[in-house]
Length: 509
Image (tube, rainbow, N blue to C red):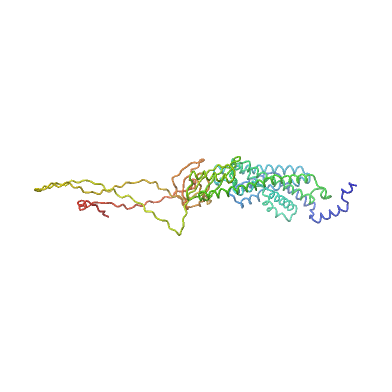
C-alpha cells in the first residue's frame, strides 16, 4: 500500500514530462555533441589556456593595485577559468572521467598560476614602488569578505553561463556572465595579500593569511556554486542519459554539488555577521574618538587607525588643530576615550597644526624692529689755549658715528616641483611612510625644508605644499627649481668735515 502511494502514477509522470518539455527548450543530439566537444577543448590545460591565465592575472593585479574597476573588468573578459568549471559540471552529470580530470586539473593549475603571478607583481611593487600602496585598495577589500550575496550572484551567473553555452543564439551573453562571476580577481587578491605581512583596513590591521583566506573562500564559493548551477542546467536540458527518459531521476552528482553549495552558506553567513558587528563597532569607536577630540581641544579628526590587542585597543590618531595638544591633553583624551568605550586604550597621537584664515578679515601686520649701526664714542683731544688770568680749557670729546654691519647666516628653503610621477601625483604624509595628509599633482610647486630621513632605503624630505601644509615626500619625485639671485642696494654712511666738528653724522646717498 505504501509502495503504491510513494510511486507516482504513469499518467502523472506523463503530464510532468509534457510540462517539463514545454518549460525547458529541447536541445537536439547534434547541439549536445557540439557543447561536449567545445567544453572538452576549452577545459584542457594547454599552452593557450595558461597564456590567457598569465595575461588575465597580470591585468587583474594591476587593476587591483591601482583600484581601477575598468582594468579589472578587462581581466575578467580574458580569464579562461569559466570553461573548466562548466566542464566539471558537464562531466559530473554525464560521468565523463576524462573531462572531469581535465577540468579539475585546469582549474587548480590555473588558480595556482594566477596566485603566483599576482604575488610576484605585488612583491616587486613593494620593492620598486611604482604604485604607492600602504593600505588595501577598495577593490581588494571588497573581495576579502564574501557573503551569501556573492553565492547568489555566482548561482545566477552559473545558470546563465550554462544556459547560454547550450543555446547557440545566446553565446553573446557569456562575456557578461564572466564579469558578474569574477573568478580571477579573488585569486589575484590572494597573491597580493601574501606579498605583505600585514595590511591596513578601516577596522584595523589584518595579517596576510586573514586577507588571503577571505579571498580564497570567495573563489571557492564562486567555483562550487557555478559548477552546481552548470550541473543543474545540463541535467534539465537533457545532457544526462537518464534525464532524457525520466526527469524525476536525479543523479547523485547533482545532489552532491547541491549539498556542497548549501554548506557554503554557513561560513559565508558567519563572516557576514562578523563583518556587520565589526562595522558597527568601528562606527561607534570613530564617533566616540571624534567627539572626544573635539571636546578636549576643539580639534578635527583626520585619520583613525586601531587594532585589537586582546581586550585593549591600540589607537593611532591623526588630527588637525589650531592649538597644539600638550602631554596632559593626550592623557586626558586617552582616559575619556577608554571611559566611553569601556575598554583599555593605548593612544598614539599625531597632530597637524593649522591656522584659520578669513578672506574678509585681513591679517594684522606686526612691525619688526631692525637694529641699525651701533655708534661708538671716540675721544678726540684738542690743543690747549692759554690766556692771561684764565684757566686752561678742559679737553672735549666729539662722537664719531662708525657703522658696524654684522651679517647673519640664515638657511633659505629651496623651491621644487613635483615630478616623475607619470601623472599620478604624489601623497603628502605626516611623517616618512606615515599618515596621508594631502595629495600633490604633477607640476605643483613645493618648498623643500630642512628635514631629511632615510626609511627602508628611500630618501624622504620635509616640504611645504601650496596650501601651507608641512609634510614629507620621497625625494625621487621632486625636481629642484633654480632661482637667479638679484643684487640688493646697500646704503653707506660717510662723514663730512663739518659734521666731525659738530660731533654729528649725516648719511649721504
